[in-house]
Length: 297
Image (cartoon, rainbow, N blue to C red):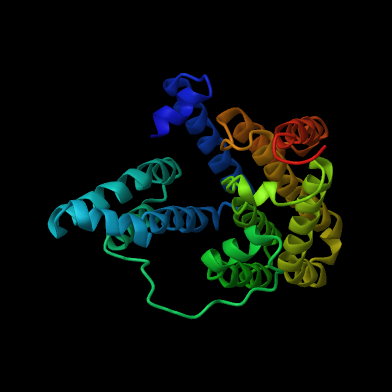
């Protein structure tokens, strides 16, 4: 499936995988450069999140229908190990062998974990129903927010500003993920507004909700790291810019999914924010053109 998606965007799969690998290595190096002590644990956290994503109830139900229990367990272990390998290589290069071994054990244990829930109640959200991406996304990832808020508390306890900034970046990364998958065309068509109004409303609601979720982090960090208030505010603005870029990238290819070129450009905005001056307007005008098929101009 991944090969097909890469080919759909006119990119040789080999080239696509090389670009993704280079991006992974670059982000890992940046993480160790910013916070060498906490980087291994953040890598474990990210790897575990990706492995838990493979434990969704719909995937497990499919495997249960097609395979017997023994084969299903083997498949899940292999899947988790495939996710584990790139993270393990980074940890091995950085000589983090204890963390590497712990992550291997975690990967195997998570292969037996099921995220199937029997809860029948609805998790309340601080968001209105209209910007459904945040309401749906928050309910799926609500448990991540206390962990990232706790990371900020740890950053204060050890007087590590970089750890707090990493927590903020991860917050924006998860909130931006709510906008990656394009919604059904009907949920765009029902709005009686122009493409410009639609895009601006989407961005405004996203920024408002993201600010609501990151405001506690900003206030606490400003209270304890006041001397670095400019860096904290700049990090927040970079996060907002990244979120905006993700939304515009999504609708620039609508109704198709975000392509590899758009994905790379979006990540580069996070790594080198000044290029947003060119990327954001480019995606904005492409989004308007894409939405003209579904909305009144």
